[in-house]
Amino acid sequence: MGGTFDPVHHGHLVAASEVAGLFGLDEVVFVPTGAPWQKSDRGVSPAEDRYLMTVIATASNPRFSVSRVDVDRGGPTYTIDTLTDLQRQHPDAELFFITGADALAQIVSWRETDKLFQLAHFVGVTRPGYQLADGDLPPGAVSLVEVPALAISSTDCRDRVRRGMPVWYLVPDGVVQYIEKRGLYRGGPSRPGEVL
Ligand code: ATP
Ligand code: MG
Image 1 (spheres, rainbow, N blue to C red):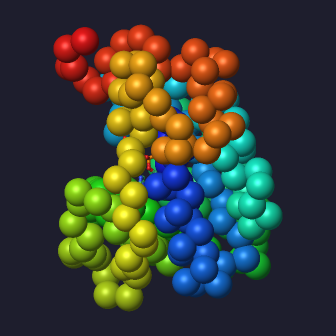
Image 2: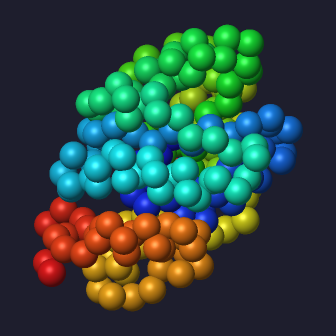
């Protein structure tokens, strides 16, 4: 499961857990992005902070792990590179790529979609506020699954911290404490052009 994870929240964790259960996955690897080009219009938190929050959030689940492939590669993350690196590290694994309804809608705009679908089976999960559809994607390339609806987004979590509102129970406890310790999301707009 790739993501910016700025910060990781319970929507990510529930989606991962549900797909792992439905597909009988041995492991879910969370892969925080490098500098994501889709979001280059806002300052994304340092990769190390996003990586560490993801480690904190997943530490208690023996089937969850975090990969540094995109963080260590640096620069903008392309899912084709993520999957290629993961396949190299786990040559015998059957790979699945878990993605929310909003991100799935952008798949068609990704590079090299044919190769992407050869590398992994894509699983699109429901997300409140977005329509889940596989559109023009090749038949059989993507499974669409319904996961328990959590209307949580990282954007809203950042907004809340900036406004002094709580993020308890939206993100894992350790992530609340990490945000506080590092002073993340205190200043600046959470969305491009936002008036503070
Ligand atoms: P931002 O608001 O910064 O875009 P986000 O909440 O969308 O953050 P991302 O890191 O962009 O989180 O998302 C990583 C992946 O998790 C994407 O595939 C996204 O669709 C999915 N996802 C995020 N939140 C949810 C949610 N509440 N329910 C289901 N899927 C989600
Ligand atoms: Mg997002």
